[in-house]
Image (cartoon, rainbow, N blue to C red; front, side, top):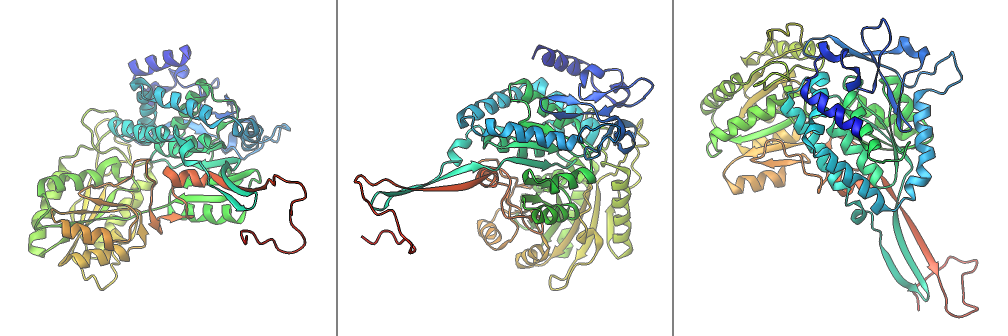
Length: 560
């Protein structure tokens, strides 16, 4: 623990940048440095310690880059690859074996003991210097601002806090005297070894949605962070290990497609959690389910905000829309990417102009810089794709009211920057499909699409016609309009004058339609149900000898 605190003090006083990374190896014990190699390898965390990649996998490494500069930070191993020069199993096999070996002891550990470890973990994550260390690595690898990265950690911490009271949600049911001397009781019991596949856009929050609740309910865990943002997961696992979590209970392995396939098909893994794109999520749900795993998968989104122009609080609504659309460079599954203005087209002109003016106030830049609001996109490919969709939308008739393409940040000219962009589809017919790519594509960038319709009924119809169902919002001062909207809208998470209605972990994350695969939600009571299964015990204790314990016919109870 003393070494950990010393590292935290060093991190806090020496802001980590790509250029300084190789000069501070002691600040990142999950990085393996080699003589004559400019960049380190990211190690795996297996059975309570950092394990270097197998020598034979050096040709299967993935570049982890700083999105503000495109400089290589480190190389990520493909953990499913076995070193052909030895008989040592792959890192994936080692991690699953460690979790399997740890399961009997951990699952039989009293629930209150498991809760206490997580309570201490939550207390530790509350330390500002701890959250700052995680946030620095998020900003370095993901690009989001330090303030946003701190929020990333905090929202994950809230799920850890909720997991410290998991015993209440694991309680079963009982009913006595179903027949003379016959009682039935049910228990919620853990599944075994579970695995999580996390995305790049929330390097701390999503792993903390997954692992803590799995551990609290008695499972052991193998986590695979995004190959683009591995360090936050390494820190989170090492912290928990330093606080006394038994070796093997939580393991972190790195990799991409091959490692994912290895997790999906491994016979010892009982359940898979995933957050990411629709293409990947549909594949993971399909392959995982075919291999007998329980799968929960949160996928893509196209979240709509409806603004009743004649009664919404104009100034606060404009500010909320800009923050929800362009914050985190639009790389949130709950970002507001579509605004539907309800009223006359002539009135909408002023609203769009004010959104544009608010967006222009946002500063684009490196996430470590003071005053920056919008960081880079995660990769050059993501930036190129977003710019291509913007151009296609213009070619198909949309008006680009604010064009963020070509954004250049002094000192970071090679970064993946795209400034806030506003695409106006003008007035649309709610009875016809909207085919413009600015509307149909999940751009996952700071791009806001605006359209205008005459009535609230039209706005609801358009929103419900969209295949996604993660979230939506309405901005109004009318209780009647809000009540109609929340009752008739289909999206699973609804905000009323709340732009990003992500529920706190007393509840569950309840996206629906094409935004989810599987039928059990993340965190909250649904999360507990995902990581446990019911076991029912029926007992017959007759007080006298010679009682009827059953015969060859189907038992019928409770008849007398």
